[in-house]
Length: 79
Image 1 (tube, rainbow, N blue to C red):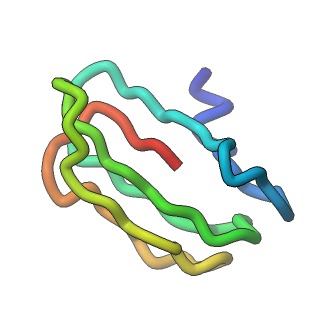
Image 2 (image 1 turned 90 degrees about the vertical axis):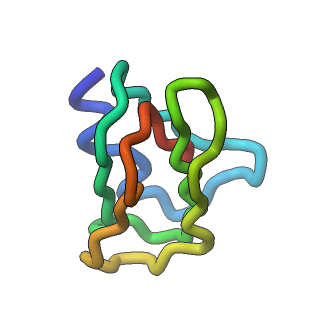
């Protein structure tokens, strides 16, 4: 849901190595994320509509408000 996308993985203090969250947007667009209220480092895989990973932002900084961009239109992000 849009609410789940807004909250994402914020406020979690731990997460299994095999867990994550897929943000699917339905159409390609430039997507921006940040780590506000996110206490654990995350990897973000930005995914094109054809399923190809466009880019990966590895080990993002917890609690950072730095904008993390897909840098090109993508349809989804896997954290």
